[in-house]
Image 1: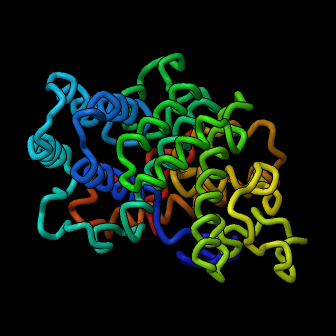
Image 2 (image 1 turned 135 degrees about the horizontal axis):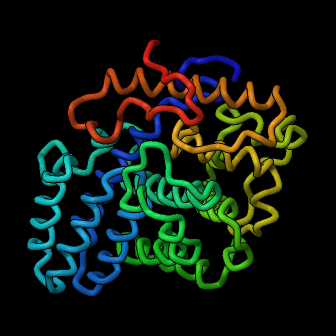
Length: 341
């Protein structure tokens, strides 16, 4: 960590709970926009999967799934919109039908539109699944319906893959984008069919997102490198020899292999940057027994820093962020909570 100022190198401008709020608000907006009777079963699957995987609102999401399951597919989209509006109000998620929620970028704190917030939801969900799978434990302060269940009840890699495909199929409204995504998925691009570990699951969706960002940048002849994370946000994620002089960062082709997508990055730091950005290191039960004293001290310093940022954000959070942006959960191993800033 080079400093502790939000938005500066290595420090996110937002805490994970703010991304969670945007994710579920975006989910409701996508539901309003994209519901079709033929997607009814996919949407039920997605709601019930989110109940098991998303870090908060598990009971509410499961209730949505059960409500949809009890209803028949709705040819009149207005009925579906009324259903999800009522659910969102009960779940404490700002009503997308409200005039203030008209689809403008002002609706989101961490994103500039529905495409960004869809990706945020996918990253949060997949990373949460990966963290539980790696640790064999629920998140600290876990709000999913599997929080008190045995490890066997945690969503597995295959189910998570199915969720990603069905979510994109049901909610992505750009026809060409959807067709391209599903083709890449079914063709096992970006290593999708060739891994069996949870860390690779989170890196797979990161790789897919970067590939799409690079395709968009190339089509629009963008001068800005769209790959994430930006060097300024995670210097350790980038290979220094490719950063110097920027010779290796030019965007030319419209398709890339897994090796080409990974080439500029150190994927271990990228994975932990995903965890820190979308879940929060303060919410995972990390086994530090294999770390050296110096590494353990560095990890503890970063976690303590992030806990302080969560405390600050919780104190300043508007009422609509309740249930999302909260005080960090008590730390594991009996460490003192960060109550003072």
